[in-house]
Length: 333
Image 1 (cartoon, rainbow, N blue to C red):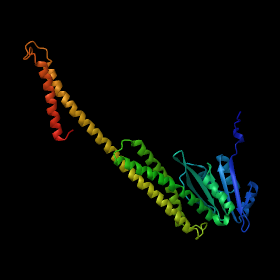
Image 2 (image 1 turned 180 degrees about the vertical axis):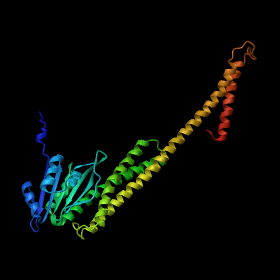
Image 3 (image 1 turned 90 degrees about the horizontal axis):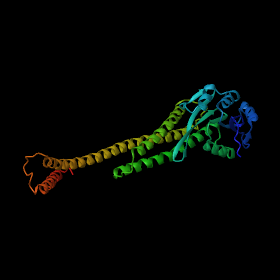
Image 4 (image 1 turned 90 degrees about the vertical axis):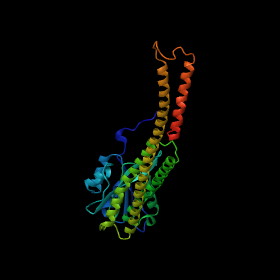
């Protein structure tokens, strides 16, 4: 029998903290020692928080770290548009990390609180990418990130790099749909085109706010970002531009593919209607002859004619063949 955990047994958040005081190796910290190290403001400290209870995590961030309530609210809300903000010597920004699951993209928000000697990352869902680089920095801090600003660049660069495989996959799907349409394949459906177009739109909606944030970091005079880190952030900014342009280009391609698909469907419908119209015209002529010879009046010519039935049938066939020949000459069939 499997026992289900009660709500009060669920932890409100999962916290990992590491402090690096060169030349020593990084040291893992519990919550108590983390608070003391945070107040000393020495070395470089990285705190990663996975929030399960927004209220408890908000209390931790505002009371223990002293972050502004508005920044904390944005960090824990998945519906806020990412933006760059500054509160009392702390730089706050968010980015959307992407993962591929069951052929679909899932986006999760990661909040960053950057100080001169610390970086606090907050996310409401597990973030394997953040966990990976947390372990790498713990093992080799001098190679991964010498300062908190270097850590910020590292994570933003890793998040943006995750968009490239997604963009390549969607570009291949767009190319396949385009090839299928122009080769006359009938297996393409409008829903297939709209699905890829929707995924490209979501990709753009998540990468463009990060592009604007990086642009703001580069355009503003932010003392928390050393001059040596600026060129690296410029490189990440260039990557976001490439991804946004890739999304826009493929959306335009899919718009053309959709128009071409609708034109092909419309042409096929016109061809079917033209053939049905020709067949209806032939049958209408035959029905006219049958209607004339089928009238029941006493005084009718050819009423007692033995060859009347074969003659009427032959006349129907003859009229049908003449109409078919005329339509063929005009290119209607």
